[in-house]
Amino acid sequence: MATRPISLRIPEAVKQDLEQIAKRFGASPATLGADYVTQGVRATQHHCIDALVPNHSFMRV
Image (cartoon, rainbow, N blue to C red; front, side, top):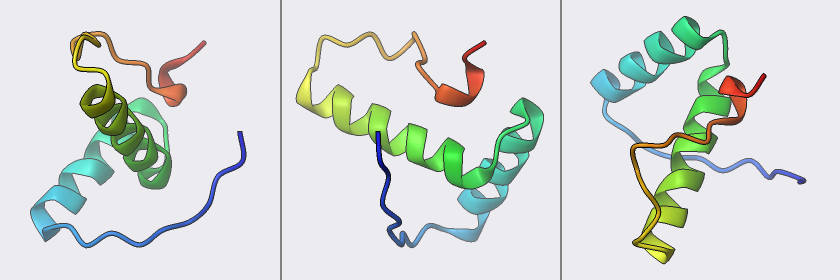
């Protein structure tokens, strides 16, 4: 799937958390952020999606 860049404004504390989590998983903050936004959109569109089952591309083996 092709991706397109966007700009988001988030609090500094959230940016730091995102960077720490991304580092822990060996992903870039951009990849992690994109996955979080994608999952949030899917969860909003389909309320029955279980939020406890992550589908982050950086976690795939």
